Structure formats: structure tokens, C-alpha cells
Length: 305
Image (cartoon, rainbow, N blue to C red; front, side):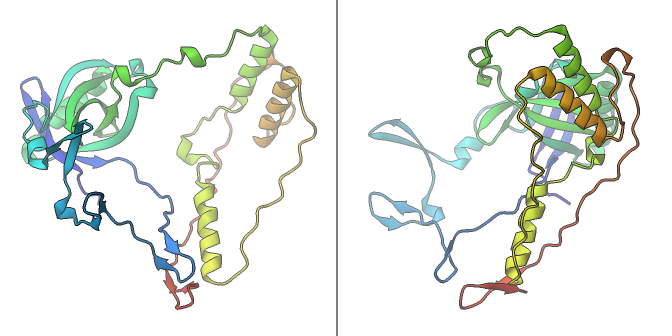
């Protein structure tokens, strides 16, 4: 069970809902440490005071803000906790909006909100059902990690999720990045739509056969092989392309045909004759990767634990 990363309350008008905040996602990436390759000893990062030229402990280290080149203001954790901010211990709902009106670029990391005590159950369920029935999301403000943040509350199954949002002035304008106007024919648009239709999923993403992290699986295989002293796995030879396609229309037609063949749909249909067609669910081709611990030998080579 994941540990709560924050506790406080949802402020909903005059209603207060005590809650705990828990991360909604988990990172399965394989992480590395730094080692001295000659003897495989762990390399550590030391914190050195540049004035005294010595290593300092964590109890000697604090936060500071450089006001000018010669002036640094020290700020303690207690001073940060005591900032007179209404949202310091509350997620304050300030407005309700249609969920689809939120720009996905604004949406950040996600968290689940769980009730903190029996007294929170009824107002929590009330807020969840009201959001669900009204098809709305709540915009909220809360203080976290040394700053006030904007948040989005939405219903996820039987729970309420909190997403951190970027402030409007943190979103860059895409105007300078947009390409110059280009002439596109109706036939090219029709073919692009046909390609989109042929690649459209009718099942949840989690059930798709490609919804696996192949890099992490392959990296785990490399680590297991090295730990066991076996030959490293090699990549399969990729199928050589039939030839370079320089015509956009030809590229679209070939892409549609390839997508249809991968779904077992045979010959392509004419754009105007295409009808939505349900495809059978494919069983996920997920590979369970066994993680094996390793021990370091005096020579620096790893062997199975």
C-alpha cells in the first residue's frame, strides 16, 4: 500500500473533507548507481562548503535565496510551513469547469485522494457523485513543495483524483513553432482519416498488445545475462523497407494497407465505403520479467545472488 504524500482537507464552500493524498502512478524504470569500474566500489556525492573547503553534514545545510551577489537570505523549513497561506493545509476548490475545457498541456502528475477518518466519508462521496452527475471537474488551489499550485479534481471510478496544473503563464505559446501553411488536397485528408480509422482502438489502452515497456524488459534481460555470465541478448534484424516513399499520398496508402494487414482486415476498402468495424480483442503480450538480485565479487564482477 503506497504511503500518503500529503494530508489536509478539501475545502468545498463551507464543507470540509479530511483527505490523504497518494500517488496515482508508479515508476517501474530500472535505475542505476554510479560505480568505480576498476573495483566496482560505489561512488558517492559529497557536499562541500566552498568557503571552508570541507564536507558538511545534512544538519548543517539549509535553504537560502540569493538576493544579490553578496546577500543570501536563509529560509528555514519552519518558516516555510508557517507562511500565512489559506491553502497551506487545504485543497481549496475555487471553480467548476467541463473537464474537456482543460488543456492537456496544463495537466501534470496525478494523485488519488482518500478519506482521512470516518467523518470524511459522506462529504467525499457527495462531492464525487455531484461531479459525476454534473460532468464537471473542480479547479482548486493548494500549497505544496514550497509554492502554491493550481489543481484539477476529477472522478476516477469510485475515487477523486487530483492533478497538478500548470499556471496559465507557465504555458508557452506554440505560435512561433507552427509550420508554414501548406496545400493539402481533400483526397490526402480522406486518406489520412482512413489511416486514423484503421489504427483506432476499440479496447482500453491497457489491453493493447503494444502497451508494454519493451526497453525496461530488454534492459532487465541484459542485466540478468550479465549477472549469470551469459551471452547478451541481441536485437532482431528489422525488416528492410520496401523502398523510400517520397510521395505523401503513396505513403498514406501504404500506411493504411500495413495497418489493415496488421489487424487481419485483408484488402483495403475505398474511402467512401469504409464502415466502422469491430476487431477482436487481442490478448496482451506482456512479458513478466523476473528481477534477480546480484552480489559484487572482489574482482568487481557481478554474480547471481
